[in-house]
Length: 460
RNA sequence: GGCCCCAUCAUCUAAUGGUUAGGAUUCCAGAUUUUCAUUCUGGCCAUAGGGGUUCGAAUCCCCUUGGGGUCACCA
Image (cartoon, rainbow, N blue to C red; front, top):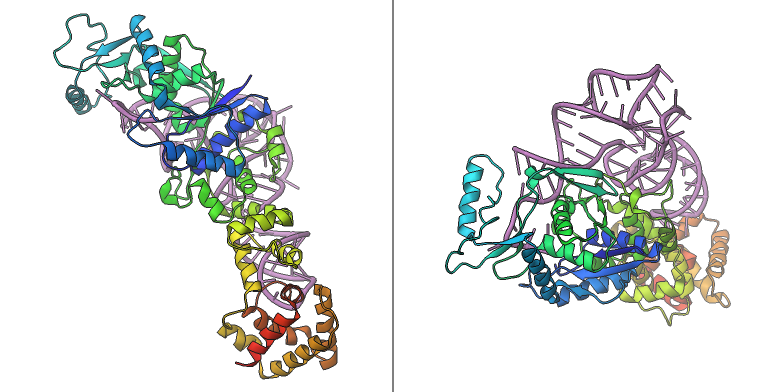
């Protein structure tokens, strides 16, 4: 069975890079009928993480990812870590170190001054004397002193680290007894039965340390997949400064979860020339061994394109529901099918769609100056009046085609081109020179409102 | 700085050592549309540089350059 996990530290919200690794882990677990676990890495419990965990679950819910089982909080597993630290102590694979922070600091300064790599000098590694008075000990693990550690990575291949270059007897428990990251990650992944660790490649250099822990404890080493970072336009790791990194911000900005997920899965992964992936297809096709080795730049244009694609394909009922979040209530509007059909072809985001809806439904507060100059001539008034009369004299008008017929009549009667009536009418209806088809707009707002808007323009 | 990773159009990417280096987004042009948008058609644009190996290299090896990540009693 494949077991994957997503293990964020509680930073307050789920960011876009986190969502990507969560998605990939989720896909791989589900594809194999396995489990996808969620663990909150809050061993540094100076922060309250309940809100953070809720933020992550909310974001998961929005995009439709679901984790299995209970959320594990590392802060509630302290006894477990202590137990395993003690096991290592008993087995002689870890030891207490009484060096103070100050001593450590001076050691590091000396080493740096000598241009050596800062590194613990193993002074308590084989210590069996009397511990110094009044010192709280940290627990250090005995790391190998020579040789190399190879990370067998499903994305990067075999990565060999020279022990002398990167390791020392690192701390697994602080002086106050709390465990440190590289220790708890390994313990938890092993205890929770995680078989495939899919995470950002900023963790690649931590992995040898975690392997040291796995080996000391006799745990099987999982498969690792270190996925490349998402970069910003400067080519740096995506950070808060880059704007929308909070997943929930995308909801506010009018993106659909389908588009966001599709966008993220295509960053560093592909399947031939295919661009559009439903969740079902991702589930059928995704394999972490196909992930690219290089970082990718986050570019919004593609997301926008995907989003407009998905908006075009959402059912009107669903669209109606989604637009409510953006303050547009259409459930009881009798012409909502016409409206939605027209607008979903021309909206990149749900926010745009909501705005365009309001531009149709709400009578324009004023008329764009440039538009008036360009499209509202002296002759336009008579044309609009004729059109208004024609509307009044028409029988039942419902569909866009009904209104289109009236326009055709007037155009034929006055022997003018469509543009002569189109421009002023558009200004009357929308207050500007762009927008959906005029017949569509009129069908949506109805005869009375159409006449009122024409009247409003004629009276300026 | 040490260690590690990475390198195909502006961007996301495709290409069992043999292709006119393909697709998508952006951009540009044309068509459709009473407008704008959509849609359709077409176009511009790439193997970082230098050495090898090979009949043949985007692909394998080495070097250079460039970029990124990481080096805590943070996670």
